[in-house]
Length: 277
Image 1 (cartoon, helix red, strand yellow):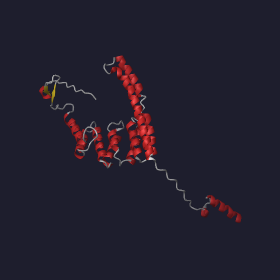
Image 2: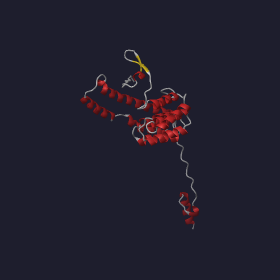
Image 3: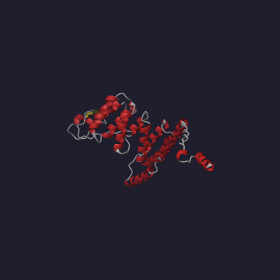
Image 4: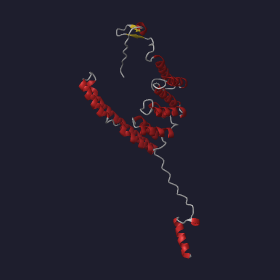
């Protein structure tokens, strides 16, 4: 009997005794993860950003060299074909996409931080056709960074993305309705209106009117205020579409003689607008 008790005591010490001898074991608390060093992560983000910009400059410099001989003349048919072939080869070497996993890895090192938000935004901007990477980055931004004003950049970028239309509309709708920042709401409204111009003209006009009503004085960062941008867009949609009567305006010809488009009403007129960008 005494031997049996000794065996049971030994088993109990190992935590393997069933039945009435067993005691509920409290798992040891996992050590708290160290707080991310945001200063170091910010420095890493800046260094990676500088490396990306340098790679882009080098890439576009090569493109410039390729097109340089044709700045002052049109290439021949054979030259154009060769130019297209070389350009295609060069674009295949675009370094942008190689930086996507690197920005994503940096974001994952600092979850919930401003550094992570900025790194995920980089993934969205340079992710291109990689739907999984871009949509994954957007999902994290909406889940962990929706309160940040930096998502204005996301709202603006979605107007030009190659992501599926339903994904773009849904994301912009979330930013419009759930972001606490007028800058994000306004950028999302502008992007959604721009996206819908080719899908639902009526709704696009409504969004531009909403933009002009709610955010008229808010600086868009380019092109003036949101009110000014919305006013120009509405004028274009309501007066400058194919088949509409061209609005009259006054200009000067190459000899400085003023004329109005209305002077040529009923005649075939070719207007050639050009400039430097």
